[in-house]
Image (tube, rainbow, N blue to C red; front, side):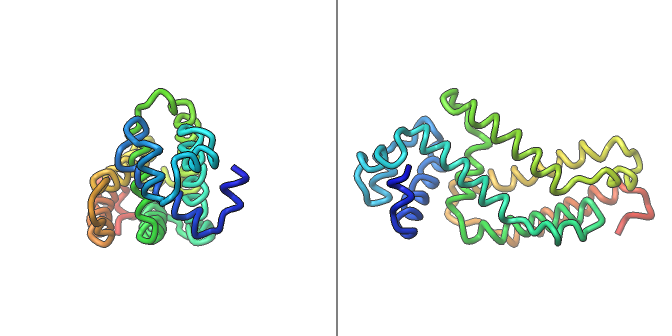
Length: 205
């Protein structure tokens, strides 16, 4: 790993993008180190020299994407939003704006949600738990339930919105282009429907 970190930023980015794209497109089992090496314009031996194994490279990418996601959100801006749906929209916009410049990262992340390889199952379980905890702490508030007609609906609706967001991303997995504006408009329409149906009348907008 030290040898990889000693490379120039441009070279590291090229290797990471090649790996993100390959794993994102083919999944863990079908992705090959050779394809990653060819896309990054380095030798297959260099990939193993930098990361040790295919699994270690995959785990490195998981941690790499985790740091990117955690750095996307403006906590102060989200905390200033007093409504659950407004926070979800704000956090979604932050993600979308970031991923417009990082298409390979988005492609990899959406593939991770569908990954079933037992070889990386342990790493995925840990990442999923940490991601869920991070999202809950970032968006969901205890007082949010008070705005719902039935307070017990708050958590299920929150999970529904997360699944909806994942579904939008998965729809574009492997696509040549991702229409971020269209996705956000559709997402906002669905949030308006949920707000109308689940919120008490005085909190509907």
